[in-house]
Length: 158
Image (cartoon, rainbow, N blue to C red; front, side):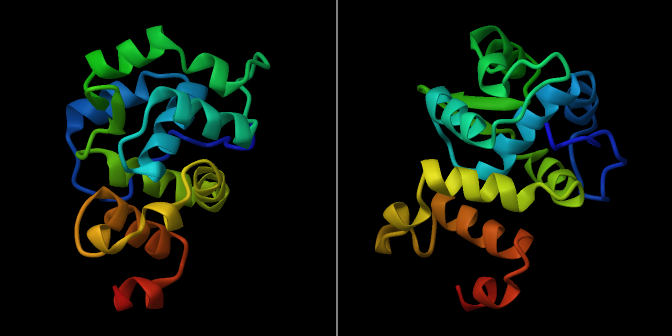
C-alpha cells in the first residue's frame, strides 16, 4: 500500500473529537478505506467502494487487498462508530470528519491517485448535469476535487 502515514496530527479542521478518536483506533489499512470514502464524498454503494479500492490496488501490511477488507463486518464497525453514514444502501463518510480525512490523504500525497481511481469507477462527467451544477453531493465532490487537486481557478468559476 502506498499510503503509509495516516496518524499525523489533524490539520486544524473542526471535527467531532469522538469521531477522530474512533478513527484513530482503526488500523492503517482500515483508515485508508475511510480516507478513500472521504475523497469520493458522495454516497456510494459498498460494491462501488470496493471497485475503487480494487483499482487502487492498495494492500494491508499482511498483503490483503483493501477491497477484500471492506466487507460487511468492517462496514458495520464503521457504522457503529459513526464514521460512516448509510441511507438505504448508500455509504458516505460522516460530514464531521470528511475534510479532516481528505486533508490527511492530501498531506500523504495520495489524494490525486484516489481521485483518479474514483473518477474511473464513478465518472463525475456522467453525473455533473444541470441538476447538480448548483447543489447536491456531486457538485460538492467536483468543488473538492478542484480544490484539493490544486485547481483553484476551476473551483472559483463554479
